Image (cartoon, rainbow, N blue to C red):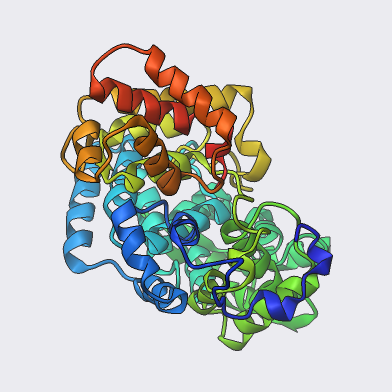
Length: 455
């Protein structure tokens, strides 16, 4: 089923019903947890097998708000970091959330919007602004996309990043207007250069004072503008509304959600995405219903999706940790993610991370393996509060063969072939050290495999 043109869109987005050929088992449950979050331990996976796919997905999507207790703890950690004003250390506060959140889908979708509305701390030096934007993305991650776009257009970090703070009526700055249409809502080909200029005039006078958004009426162009076929004395809110009203907007966002949750390749046709786009528009641009439909669909559990994404650095590292109930040094993880291309708060440019095949090359593969090795060597790394060997014994794992099988179920989208298993056995048996050393060596060997880079 690798030819997208042979797939019926109506079948693709119908609710998944397990069959003999595609059962609801450890493999499909682990797939759901990897894509909707970062990973899950085997005990929870086995518990989930006894529930229906629809019920599990519904529960995941319903968890679209952080509990008060968790948010209080996570925010306190971030506030302590903000006192130092270093955005690089702030990254560790986000790693804490990724590692401990009980609402993995909410945090995964926050990461999606961070790459979508890419704002980088290399330019926005104020860590508080970056953290406020992060909270904004989290608060709207599975909510109203239109509301999110309106709020991001007045977000301090975004205004600084795209130079809206110098958008004056005498010299309209086009950066935010262009990216609003090209990268955030519509895509190339859905607007003209004149639309960019006219939309930029709508945002004139929007600026930051004392780190807060305000409208400077003396710098706002009050003349008539014509944006995407509509004319009037528009303000920035009108400009955002007009962009969101365009027919191209739902399809553009549906494609983004598809690529994030379903597969990097092949590129879906417009016909394939149209049911999602229609549902998005009919729900007044609510994100949660579309995500629920994707995660509960036939296509999501088909060969077009399973094993067809390349894990981002965050997915690889947090996936390993969460799948084995591991905790570690969050500063180490944050710094390591930056070194292998996915520094939190540090997207490479306004387009965010390219993802897909761009995630891996000979250099990043080595960097990924080294980061996992550093984590496994760090004295702070524990597995459900224990050593890895103790954790695995509690799971009923006694032998190398059982450990390989355990890691396969938790970490891999595609099962290992026999030659690869033989190679791993030889690696482990030829090494020295006690049981803990052998188990960590085995885990490192498996996470370094090319096949483990697939989700």
